[in-house]
Length: 72
Image (tube, rainbow, N blue to C red):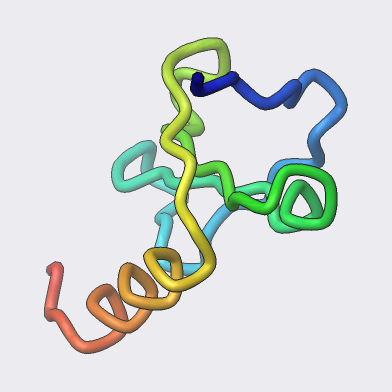
Protein backbone atom coordinates (compact mmCIF):
# COMPACT_ATOMS: atom_id res chain seq x y z
CA UNK A 1 0.00 0.00 0.00
CA UNK A 2 1.35 3.42 -0.96
CA UNK A 3 0.65 6.40 1.26
CA UNK A 4 0.94 10.06 0.42
CA UNK A 5 3.38 11.87 2.72
CA UNK A 6 2.03 14.80 4.73
CA UNK A 7 3.72 17.86 3.23
CA UNK A 8 1.50 20.47 4.86
CA UNK A 9 4.43 21.82 6.89
CA UNK A 10 7.11 21.29 4.25
CA UNK A 11 9.54 24.11 3.56
CA UNK A 12 9.81 24.51 -0.19
CA UNK A 13 12.99 25.75 -1.88
CA UNK A 14 12.96 27.15 -5.42
CA UNK A 15 15.50 25.53 -7.69
CA UNK A 16 18.42 27.68 -8.78
CA UNK A 17 17.50 26.62 -12.32
CA UNK A 18 14.13 28.38 -12.04
CA UNK A 19 13.93 31.82 -13.53
CA UNK A 20 12.25 34.99 -12.23
CA UNK A 21 10.18 35.43 -15.39
CA UNK A 22 7.50 32.94 -14.37
CA UNK A 23 8.76 29.97 -16.36
CA UNK A 24 10.61 26.82 -15.36
CA UNK A 25 9.62 27.17 -11.71
CA UNK A 26 10.53 24.04 -9.81
CA UNK A 27 10.54 23.74 -6.03
CA UNK A 28 11.63 20.91 -3.78
CA UNK A 29 11.37 20.21 -0.06
CA UNK A 30 14.71 18.70 0.94
CA UNK A 31 13.94 18.51 4.68
CA UNK A 32 11.06 16.11 3.97
CA UNK A 33 13.67 13.43 3.25
CA UNK A 34 14.29 12.94 6.98
CA UNK A 35 10.62 12.22 7.71
CA UNK A 36 9.41 10.60 4.49
CA UNK A 37 12.52 9.10 2.89
CA UNK A 38 11.50 10.92 -0.30
CA UNK A 39 12.21 14.28 -1.91
CA UNK A 40 9.04 16.08 -3.00
CA UNK A 41 9.15 18.21 -6.17
CA UNK A 42 6.43 20.56 -7.46
CA UNK A 43 5.68 23.37 -9.90
CA UNK A 44 5.92 26.59 -7.88
CA UNK A 45 3.23 28.17 -10.04
CA UNK A 46 0.82 25.49 -8.77
CA UNK A 47 1.60 25.12 -5.04
CA UNK A 48 -1.62 23.20 -4.37
CA UNK A 49 -1.16 21.04 -7.46
CA UNK A 50 0.42 17.61 -7.76
CA UNK A 51 3.71 16.71 -6.11
CA UNK A 52 6.22 14.27 -7.52
CA UNK A 53 8.09 12.33 -4.83
CA UNK A 54 11.51 10.97 -5.71
CA UNK A 55 13.83 8.55 -4.01
CA UNK A 56 17.26 10.00 -3.20
CA UNK A 57 18.84 8.14 -6.14
CA UNK A 58 16.15 9.39 -8.55
CA UNK A 59 16.64 12.94 -7.23
CA UNK A 60 20.38 12.69 -7.84
CA UNK A 61 19.77 11.48 -11.38
CA UNK A 62 17.32 14.34 -12.05
CA UNK A 63 19.70 17.01 -10.74
CA UNK A 64 22.59 15.51 -12.71
CA UNK A 65 20.51 15.49 -15.89
CA UNK A 66 19.40 19.11 -15.36
CA UNK A 67 22.99 20.22 -14.75
CA UNK A 68 24.27 18.46 -17.87
CA UNK A 69 21.43 19.44 -20.18
CA UNK A 70 21.18 22.77 -21.94
CA UNK A 71 17.54 23.62 -21.19
CA UNK A 72 17.64 27.13 -22.68
